[in-house]
Image 1 (cartoon, rainbow, N blue to C red):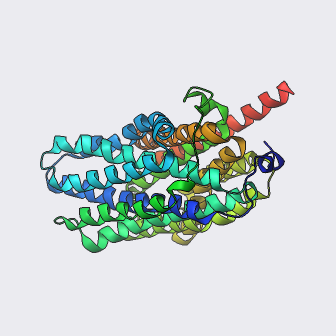
Image 2: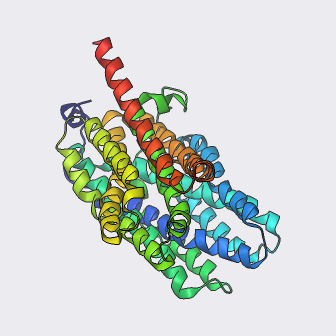
Amino acid sequence: MSHADDGAHGFPEEIHWPSLIAAISAISAVGIAIGLGLPLLSVILDKRGISSTLIGLNSAMAGLAAMVAAPITTKLAHSFGVARTMLWAVVLAAVSALGFYYATQFWMWFPLRIAFHGATTTLFILSEFWINAAAPPRRRGLVLGIYATVLAVGFAIGPLIFSKIGSEGLLPFAVGACAIMLAFVPIYIARNENPVLDEKPQKHFLRYILLVPMATAAVFVFGAVEVGGLSLFPVYANRSGLEEAHAAQLLTVMGIGNMVFQIPFGMISDRLKDRRPMLFLMAVAGLAGALALPYLVHHWWLMAALLLVWGGCVSGLYTVGLAHLGSRLKGSDLAAANAAFVFCYAVGTVAGPQAIGLSIDHTGNDGFAWALAGFFALYVVIFIVRTVLSRERT
């Protein structure tokens, strides 16, 4: 769909700030809560003597909850409205975040994880849909770049808060719950400006994965590489002989890359008629970066420079993929496609750590880099096959 088509739908060319602030505040609160919650919950379970395997199993509930919540979210928003569904999700996420403190038995953490991550997934999907629907077509990439940057900042602030307040007592849980509840206010203020879903999606939920494959495949790779890479990079760095502090600094550099490149990448994508070649180039850069890791791991500055750009390209798959999705679809189709987009992200977050862990176990420490390269190579292959097939049809 061209920009001219977008304009014909009567979308304004100015950025509509109340909608943007509502959606961005929702996602920044989620980012802070998840960034604080993931290390906090793991540390507390470890202190209670729960095995690493069971901690991993409990953490995996996040991906499972996201997969379950993704198809349901669009139906809830269609029945109750986007803003109202988001407000209830905020309350559920905050209550379940606080619930971890009061849940003394380990088994209680499984339903709490499902409730917390189910609610945050709903906020992810609907805030992305709201932003994509409210963004002016010619500035969609810029708006989504701002959105992705704020999300990255939220994820970075979470662990920082955790490092300051620790894991003792009610305080960290109360801080997490309050961070989530702060999102309630801007969503409530902008509730009458939320996009209306007055018709049902035209296709079955899973069909949307194949409808815009370059976007859904991009976010699958992003989920796999981001979560798998972050989870297992400390293991890779440690086995490569890097000090723990140096490994942590490299992850910080990668996080900075995630933040600083999203707005420029979004603005570049706004100048393109078709964003797919840009997604392809980011995947190629990701592939080259992953293959270079074993050769640069003992050169800190070269590694830092690589991870800065590499981190930007990895997150760029998410930002530009989301912009590509928004330029192709409208209304309830866009909402359903956003749900499929987040579903593919969730599948990636489950597949990434598993594939990378298996690769390290079976091929040695460099298996970390080979597995990451494999995910990017998959995207490159999908792009080439898709391009060849579309040319044959014309």
